[in-house]
Length: 274
Ligand SMILES: Nc1ncnc2c1ncn2[C@@H]1O[C@H](COP(=O)(O)OP(=O)(O)OP(=O)(O)O)[C@@H](O)[C@H]1O
Ligand SMILES: [Mg+2]
Image (cartoon, rainbow, N blue to C red; front, side):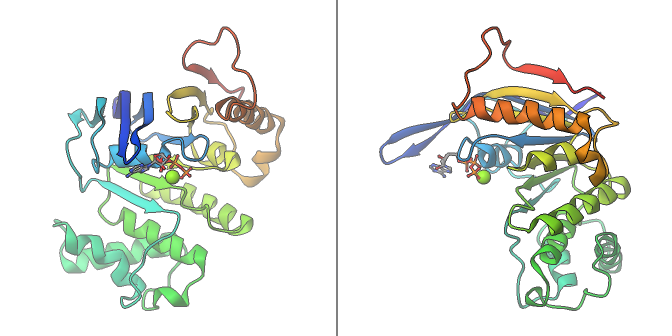
């Protein structure tokens, strides 16, 4: 399958007052068209930096970032992004917040078509009837749903989600995981999900990439079979427990709390048991 996102041997250091801070060192991530890859790793290892590279908001010191066969050189409108704290404009209604990207980046959609699409997306995430409310009238989970619609309004080639559910309580988060499956079925996209939640990673993604501590390299890749957990009950099966144990162990290695396996190829790639 064609690699829609292809990040090859990327190295990057931020310039700081006290000298260069190496953040990425040997990062390889590739996502096929329609794929959904979750990226997990210790706090501060460089995950958000990775999202900025894909979005073309910054260039790496070394290595290559490719999107749909083209070298990424600057920001692109074909990338949709959603973050942990959705920034919605309080003076605009929910509908108008979702429509905002169409006002900033030109679109082929007429005003009416844009509005129809925004209404469709809002109903897909369960926000039908809230189109004319203001952001402060919505709960945190509802605001996150609206922010997801805003990220999808342009039918992005790539959807980047940087800990989008991190600030939500466990039950709301699980609701949104199910919403994500529904959205992906109706509005197929190629996705990268940054998360701290291993259950979320195996529930939503078809591949989980574990990054090492800073400077981050690709330490481990776990392929989740298509029969992997897709309902909340599936998260309690022996197969899911095994996937979570493998990932938990890799995170401990990344944090320096467990020794790396002696003969491990670099990075290890494993297909989880179906
Ligand atoms: N613009 C910047 N200038 C200098 N240092 C930066 C800049 N942005 C990030 N950093 C540093 O680079 C490192 C990686 O940051 P990044 O935000 O990519 O980590 P992260 O993996 O997303 O962390 P978290 O899990 O806490 O969100 C951190 O040590 C951070 O302090
Ligand atoms: Mg981050």
